[in-house]
Amino acid sequence: MIDGSGPQRRELATAGDIELVAALRRNDERAFEVLVDRYHAALTHLAMAYVGDRAAAEDAAQDAWIALLNGLDRFAERASLRTWLFGILINCARSSRRKTARSLSFSDLADTLNGSDAAFDPDRFLPAGYRWEGHWSAPPEAWPEERLLEEEALSMVHQAIAHLPPRQRAVLTLRDIEGWPSTEICALFGISDANERVLLHRARGKVRRELAQYLAPSG
Image (spheres, one colour):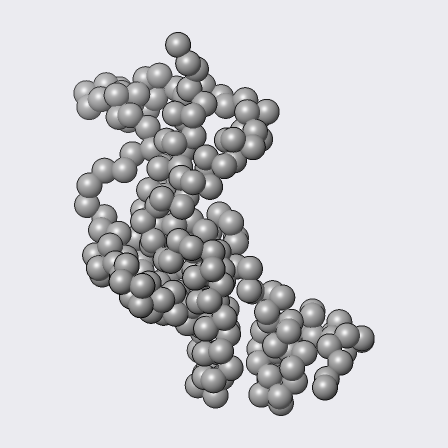
């Protein structure tokens, strides 16, 4: 058995993904452990956008790791390992959803750009014909930080994210939770920069709207 601790394990922990791929191809199990430490939590978060169940998300993540190991010889390094791995994860999550007879149509996953998902009521902006058309007519009040940190408020935000359409939730998860750059998100989903911005705007808008309703003064 290979000892996963010690100096060599610590050296691999700081290695880049391409170096870890090379180590994996040498059958170095420590490289796999490092990759799991690096990406497993994020894979599970993203899988939740498609399956909505923690256990199913964990299963999809496990399937993605198995697929990575089985398909490592096909990784041509034209894309980053992270983008390739998360692409595998999305396929595994969609397959899991189909197996449970809760599959979404392509149009659901694509999150069509028609329609309106404004974060705030349009009446709060100046209408056409005004000098400052489109600017606030009634700016939103600042949200008190102590209320934003309340456990109930945080729980509400998580619920709002959970109710987003899969593609919106996935983009929001990668951009705002995992900190991915928009270029990599576009490459992962095969969408344009404009499409990514719209998906992110809509997702953020829906969450903000839920938060605004929660924080609105009562009475």
